[in-house]
Image (cartoon, rainbow, N blue to C red; front, side, top):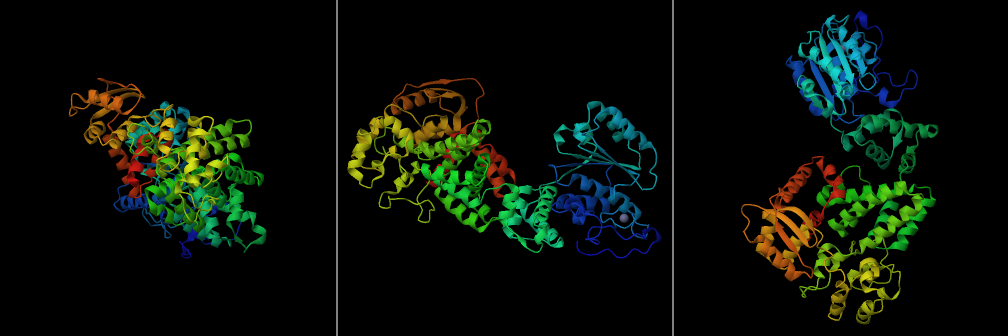
Length: 631
Ligand SMILES: [Zn+2]
């Protein structure tokens, strides 16, 4: 990349190379994305597969008539198309070269293409010219030989936008292209391109450039521009660029121009944060810790501070969503926390928080925040709406998980009290959320440091246990809503109280079939549980009513066995019926699919994002799986 071009000796190359590398500081100001636009495949970063495949094709002389480049916007499709045009038409510094994947950059064709003024390279944006006449006009010239170059190259951007008739017109040419014509198509939506067109193209998928490569690339360019960034600042830009070189460079441009006056001064993360409108990350962590610890006053206080400092309420929620997503990824693949580009503060606090949160708590937080964000966007007062979301989150953080709720069912009697799993956040000595006055209390009460009523958090165990059930006006309501009304640690005295509390809402956990399976596990009905997992395609489920299709291997009396189990173990009447309908996959099938997805992530596949983005629709199956892993 840094090697300067050899001075051209041939008569047609008297003009010095206009390559960005060789002439960094002359001429009018050009935006970085244009100034550093790659002109050779070597300069094209992060697209190794594409470069390798194309290089092979060129070396073997097997050049396709049409190429199609696909990938998200800003990833370099048009740039790549132009490099292909160069590669096809380069004649080398001495004018005798063949098509090459290392275009010389100095011959007339290379220069003309780089400057967008080559007569034989025809570019068209299908987004603005979608009609059949546009295409006809364009490909009318196909039958004429190129004026100067070896090939006429037709670059059609956003090709998926062409009308059906336009595609048909194009197809005729694609079926029997003249020797001297090449097509390069670019599209963000490959699925909208007709298969008849696709089948006649060599396809290349441009991938998002990974953070490390982007970081190194931006650092190099910043240096050439005489600007210095702190590592954290640069990583913020990389993260915002989301794999797009072009977006990243335009952010880099903005950041550099902001501090132009004091050039030579290092650009820090505060400046970049301000530019990107990001809140200070440590504040996001503090807010999240307060919420997931059930500390409502602290959460509202922290939110207030951010709001007064000028943060957008929706942006605050978005930042928290971002952190929750990241924590979830760490839970699945711990190495994520150690990736390059993660600032030290986030790495330490992230790992700490992740270790104290279980997957169900993270999944629940994600869903509630996502829903809350939608509310905030339509609410008359974004501030009020956000506060309500935070309060809801904080209270839900102290609700028992389905496991704990099941354990509190009266039927079993042996494990009537929820364990520590019922608090979203587990205690940690280094917790930035101060554990208030409950240092001597059982670990379970860490989530209670900001009780709306005073007595429940007092560290005097037995008498309080009694009062929790008797003093409160509505015991069932308080058990569901108030952080401090949550059932206390195991104590024999507390048992009768527990039963009273559980009575009005008998099956809090039995909201899905997965809950039933888990209950079977709790009650040690091993065989039944196995049949439920392997042999049941759920057709319809609601609490009290199950309809399913059994597999061939299911015992014939499975419905009856399930009915009597449920009617024994719960205090509502269940109706279980067998159906001929297809139904959902069995839990085992579900799990296998999920496992495959996780493994794909483990091998570094970017699929994990897609998996996690499906969390809003996630069912309790996820919760069960993750929680049982903790056992
Ligand atoms: Zn050339």
